[in-house]
Image (tube, rainbow, N blue to C red; front, side, top):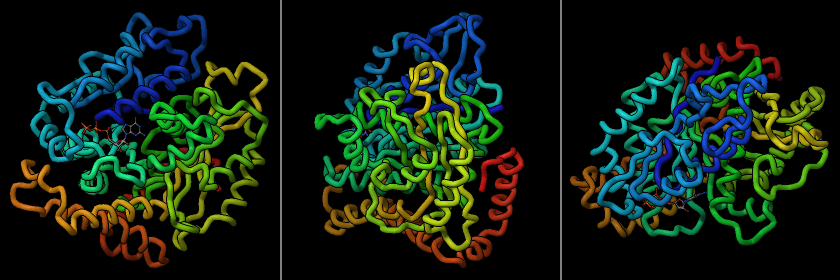
Length: 475
Ligand code: GTP
């Protein structure tokens, strides 16, 4: 049985994404925005599994296992107004006497370390309400001040305090044009913590998201609410097998361990299609499709939620979820095709993991003639992600080479002795890029083995455990 996951939403972007994520989960589990069950539990035989993400009280009221943190009140207030009585009021924290981190990573980071005990106390209380606590998911942007800086200090504190618990992040990268001049600094400083402290990071970027929203919503005037619906659709599909249990992929670590061959390579690229109205407002109308087409469409970069310039990337692992009335033969055919089409690293197993997800009985499409529509989500670990990191490094180098705009960081505790924190962080990100490129070679596993024999031993064990769970759709 899957353990509980605590979601931590930090900053404006993190809390906005949280709003769409909880909306989607509430829909899929038949829960009102107030937390009440849409139908009394005794009226229906629940086949879904709410415990990983929700607490339930004696009056059949559901409460998200979520913490909401910010340095200004608007995003959390908006969330609480939208979901009256849904969230545990003890779980929101807004700093007093500040109006945001002013897009400055060091302000967010110092605020995070100053209040670390408060956050860990909130987390401990939330863990007390679990029976089989499994891990965390952090939602944030890497470019502002709070989600990046406070988020970074939380990543360090959590991995220090709960080293055995799985720590995943859903991290939004900025678009091409920096809205704020210091965004490249914030991004590199945060990337260092993602590289060092997260077990798996699902990357989104606002270039790709904004391009997709235009297409999906067929409206040139889209905003963050729209982009966040795309993120929420992806997040809900990743967790489908946990909430609508099947024989395989029954926990978050079992999903991510199919994708992360070594701790250095844990940045994942998401793709989703089609965005129908089960997932987004004004989404495409349903049309009959099949799992074969959907699985191949997921490889098409126009459906990716990350923009990449890297042509013909090298893949290490692929995980798909297909939701709907799927013909298993279509999956087998698609797997063969994907193996031919995708450029896998020479050492990779070329296994494509497919979860045959279940559609929520509460969603509109399940009760209508639209049952024939299939939605698909792909998470890929590949060198496409190098493009996002390259972009971050280039914009960083441009301003750091001139030592421009550093004054805003001077008061930060980590910057009292100069600029070493910038130089070290840039080096960590370069190492991630180099690791991804080295992993294209067939000698990669030998190098990993030499570098850390123990780590490789653990990895083999973890993979075997996943296989032993009965992953009968691996090809
Ligand atoms: P401060 O405002 O400095 O306190 O930090 P913050 O973390 O609250 O800032 P924010 O989350 O607004 O981060 C800024 C970055 O996130 C920019 O790149 C924005 O484009 C992006 N962003 C902000 N809100 C959203 C959102 O709801 N969705 C998406 N996709 N991106 C967002």
